[in-house]
Image (tube, rainbow, N blue to C red):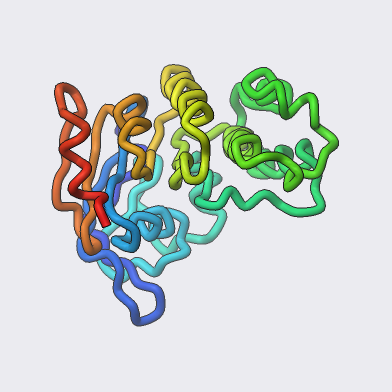
Length: 232
């Protein structure tokens, strides 16, 4: 089965607050998928449903072709799901290299190690012993991406990776994400930057009020038509 992530009619809660109302979403091997929507519609809760942070009360979560029961916080990482979280979450008091090594804790085999990340982001090698939080915003995003790749994932989930970054940095990230996909790692891009979506995603899903209301191929799609789904 080529499904790396599959949500089938997922209803997800935080405590008694219901956020997702029957979400269907699939990320297949080698795919690049955008999840689009306004702030507060449940995009990050989709990620948290995969990670076992949100409580899935109805529906099914499949990871790596296997139906999951009660997800533990480490299940997704062991099954090849790696996340670059919104806000980056660089660990204070750790150097760049120490932050990267955290990503390898699950010990999955693959091409990604510290030296490969340094090839991808030479600035991280130059400043390897610098505290991660001393980096600029764009450099911290590179560190967060490198740390996620250190887990050698089959799927890389990117939660608002362009947030707060200059356009030139976003352009660099688009090239990197495409290289990652071409190298065999699927990408789920949660994003409101239409330029980045257009450059990276081959498929899209629109989330509104906890429900996927539109899905399709980006081929031949005018990305500006998606703007109405992210307008505040």
